[in-house]
Image 1 (cartoon, protein in one colour):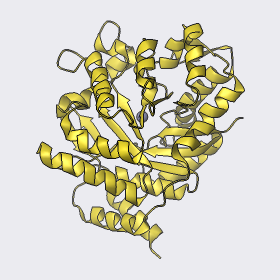
Image 2 (image 1 turned 90 degrees about the horizontal axis):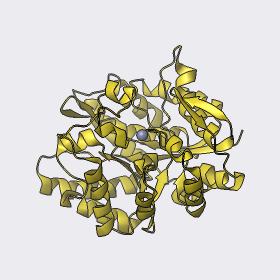
Image 3 (image 1 turned 135 degrees about the horizontal axis):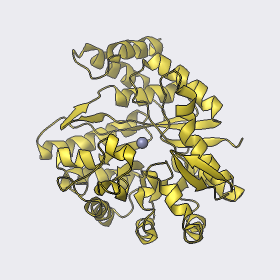
Image 4 (image 1 turned 120 degrees about the vertical axis):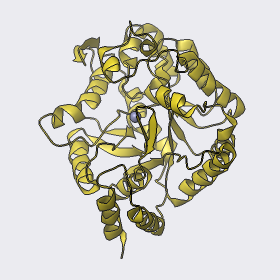
Length: 358
Ligand SMILES: [Zn+2]
């Protein structure tokens, strides 16, 4: 099998870090995934409550270290103040810190509808301006989740899964159009920003939005499944194939890969998305994904080479060097905190300290 470099990997299941590394090792081998980009998601939404998972950022760096030299890490911004002016300065400080200690970019889940609703901070708010300006100037990449599939804004078109997971959006949420406009406003302000929209920006409905987004010089998409963008595109492939050819240097392989808990569903769970993407790009046959029939588009091998590997290397180059003493300090500080969201936070912090000292 062709090797793939996955730009979009998470580790949010509550599994001890030591075990997470072991699981990833096996999963990567079984899926021919050879380079990895770990994306931190430091916030989760429970009802209306946005809660901090304070180990996420540090874990990204640890996973990067564990899979060195084939791994990369993206940090997430932490919201430690209610005051927007303080926050604006803090985001800049954080970005500079992440940049200097070995993260390779920033992951922003901020464009997720439920987070936008809970935080009431639109993506184009000035609170992010200093941060975006720094990111633009330093050429440090951002992978952003923007909106969700269009169907989710209408209960009659939302998928069963979306309904089950509470991802259906009524008028209390920003509309998909509003969220998309916020991103275009950001690009207007920071046209050279290296911004990668996950899940093809959920733009599979309208190629002109996708074109407009890529009219900026440093923007790109990852093809991580979600919604299902690839299947939508395959239905109008004569329109989309020229797009993929034209922008072949700006499309990244990604799958929302996770370290899944070991159990009966383990093999099915971690294989599901890589298998789907690869059946889609490597065959011209009919397959099924989450109950939906689709036809592979059998993309030219030269294009796959770019999407699977070359673009990833062009974007990230050599992994940034990790500052080990920063990691130890951070782990020590986190180990002292009395409350954590993750059950294994203390254990994980100790594990990191013990593995990195000497
Ligand atoms: Zn993701």
